[in-house]
Image (cartoon, rainbow, N blue to C red):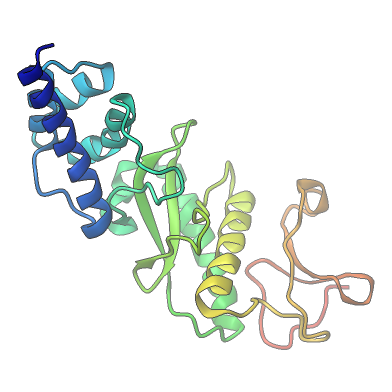
Length: 242
């Protein structure tokens, strides 16, 4: 590759990198990523991720956003391992139709279960909402984030918790754990609380703690430990489960 071609190559890859940082700052990309990828190919750079990006159509915006960080990593760009790497985070309402119906039903039911506990305990945190990062994990499951009143929680220094599970109880546990972390980071208090001991309640640490009963419970570790209520059945002043 001669000097001119090398400069063109670097410029096109730099354009892709600039698009990435624009995405991080504004949540949007203001250029055609497939077009930039095609120009980088023409300038002499090559790679399987770049070719895949260049071959996308004008309606493949989400796939282009998913591929962009992989294209940049393929080209040797350091995006900073400690920085947030989400693309445009989308609302659940605008993205739910992309997912399997069983996953949608399970996730929405889990959200309703935990919202019920928030409502019945009088937690003043707003309405619990779901958001999609635009990405899928290694198992093909969407990476979903929690938030309140339509604003996704992006983490308090650490990566934000993604929620999900293979069945309803585990999805509920995932959502409940995520809500606890969100509340601690955003509102700086522990939720929920034992009405007897004024201590924060805990979720089961393993399936063996609840699988026999069929449904997980909120547990207080005070006075030797006792269950307070099944998830979804909390309320102010609830008596411990006997």
